[in-house]
Structures are given as C-alpha cells and as structure tokens.
Length: 342
Ligand SMILES: NC(=O)c1ccc[n+]([C@@H]2O[C@H](COP(=O)([O-])OP(=O)(O)OC[C@H]3O[C@@H](n4cnc5c(N)ncnc54)[C@H](O)[C@@H]3O)[C@@H](O)[C@H]2O)c1
Ligand SMILES: [Zn+2]
Ligand SMILES: [Zn+2]
Image 1 (cartoon, rainbow, N blue to C red):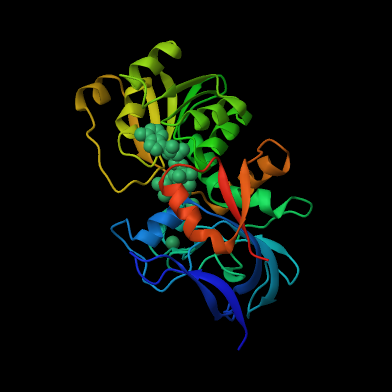
Image 2 (cartoon, protein in one colour; image 1 turned 135 degrees about the vertical axis):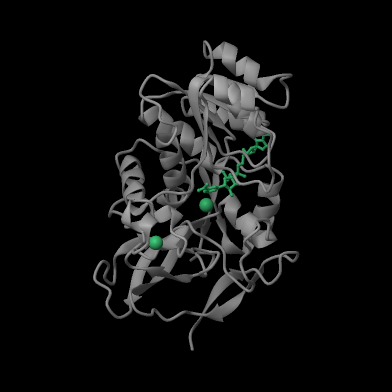
C-alpha cells in the first residue's frame, strides 16, 4: 500500500488532520492524478464546518480546485491519458441521463457527485477524477495560476452570464474575495462596467486594480444600495453576489436597475427578505447560480489561457491549511490561497 500526505476532516468542530492516508485506486472511468497545486475555496471551509443542510460525511478530504498530472487510469478511460494535465472540480461527475444532464444543465443533476465533498478532493498529493468530467488544462499555463479558475473562475463566469447583461452594462460584484476578484476580471473581459462592494478596503483596492470603476465599502456606508444607484446612473443592470455575509444579498437586489438580474453565488447559511413590491414593479430577477458545466469550464479556462484573467494568489504549503482557514474565516486573505502539494 502506498500512502500520501493529505488534509482530512475528521469532525466539523476539529482542525483538519494533516496526515498520511492511502493513495486511492482508479475505478472505471477514473484517473489517478498527482496534485501539484490546489486552490482553497470558501466552500471547503463551509464543508469542513458542516455549514450547509446537506453535509459531507467525515472523514473526507476537501478541495475542488486541484491541478495536476494523470499518473494512472482505470478501465474504460478514453478522454485522458497518463501525463495529461487535468483538474478536479465541484461538479466531479453527473449522471448524464437525467432531464438536467440532457438539457445542458448538468450542474443541476440530482445524481451529481461533488469534489472534496462526496468524493475526496485535492487537499492531498493524489486525487481521483472522473475522466468524463474533469477539466482539461492546456499545456504551457501555470498550474498554480490556473487552479483558482477551476472553481472561482468557472463559477463567476457562469454567474456573470446568468446576469443577462450585455457589453457596456453595469455589473455589481459584491464580495471581492477569491471569487469576486476574479469576477471583476471576467466582467471586464466580457465588456461590462464594474461596481464592487466589500467590507474591507484592501479588497476594494484589489477590485480597482482589476478594473472596477466604482467601489463602495458596505461597512462605511449608511445605504450601499442607494449609493450604487447614484454612482451608476440609476442602478446596475446585473449583480453577482459572492459575499459570505447575508447582509450583502438584499443590498445587491437594492442596487439593481429596473429590469435587472442578480445572480446569487455566495453561500452563507442564511436567508434574506425580498421586497415583493419593488421586485414586481421593477421587474427584477433573483436567481441562484451554481458552478458551471464542462462547456462553461472550457470557456472559463480559455479566457485564462488568452491572458484575460490574472488571479491574485499566494502559494502556501498544505501544512498551513488550518491557519489558511482561520485567515479566510476572518476575511484576511487577498485573492486566493493556492497550496503547493509537492
Ligand atoms: N455558487 C457556487 O457555485 C459557488 C462556487 C464557489 C464558492 N461559492 C461560495 O461563494 C462564497 C465566496 O467564496 P470565496 O472563496 O470567494 O470566499 P472568500 O472568503 O475568498 O471571499 C468572501 C468575500 O466576501 C466579503 N464579505 C464579507 N462580508 C461582506 C459583506 N457584508 N458585503 C460584501 N462583501 C462581504 C469578504 O470580505 C471577502 O472578500 C462562499 O460562500 C462559497 O461557498 C459558491
Ligand atoms: Zn469552490
Ligand atoms: Zn443527471
């Protein structure tokens, strides 16, 4: 039996256990991947804390922004070969047969399996991927820099598409963390004008660095929605909420222009009141958006390969995972942390 170093969640209240565990064996359609880098998503923190109604079952290995190289394949694998560069993703696999899979909505498949949640993820030196669903990483791109694209990138790219905005429109990015700072860049690459909201000045500086024209610090403003309405000449055409605080959600709805759409992406385990009168009279759309399909992923990676997206990230060792989670919980990370698995 060969072993590897991995970070294991043993309970929702304890620190992760960085320890030696067995290297998994690829089954049918699966490939074994030597992980080089893995981004740390706030979803991994929600998973480790058991924040959501549908909880993962400890012990498990989080991580769904892993980038590495295929070192072995199981039976019936045709899409990848040994030596190929691939990643894992939140949409680790789907059934391919349900009404959602059949209509281009595999992200809604009720039989999907999620990376770092239902299937062990990329916080280890090796991981399994489903060869039919794993993202393919083109040659020549930095494995550390591409890692944040595999969840943060695809999620905000799809969420921005779902704002139903067009070039020249204003888009609000609420929450400029790992997802949000990449959202600013996709929005600019897609020709949108960006307004950004956070509760931390350094996050707003990062948003401006990546092209945001307007920034509002929600912790310093009496009415961030009204301020955004004024600064964008009547409200934003679309909004993407990546914030990890429930207060940001009604603020984003309040910042919409008439006819606007907000894509909810952040997942704090909370709810918020929706004002019926303004939603109806102003014809607003409020929708959820969850990661992206394999096609969205390929498109999101293509923006990155063409140099349109430049994630801000810090490389840290896997041994730092508990400190990284503590800093993330406190909102002290600029951009993404990418862990080096070597
Ligand atoms: N829907 C999806 O497909 C999907 C995919 C990935 C992550 N997520 C979720 O998105 C959220 C963000 O993930 P992340 O990795 O970017 O987290 P992060 O910790 O890197 O960033 C969160 C940001 O929210 C900001 N914030 C906190 N309170 C705020 C407020 N009141 N107003 C505005 N901003 C505020 C923080 O300052 C920080 O910049 C998490 O809940 C995560 O689970 C959803
Ligand atoms: Zn994620
Ligand atoms: Zn399905």
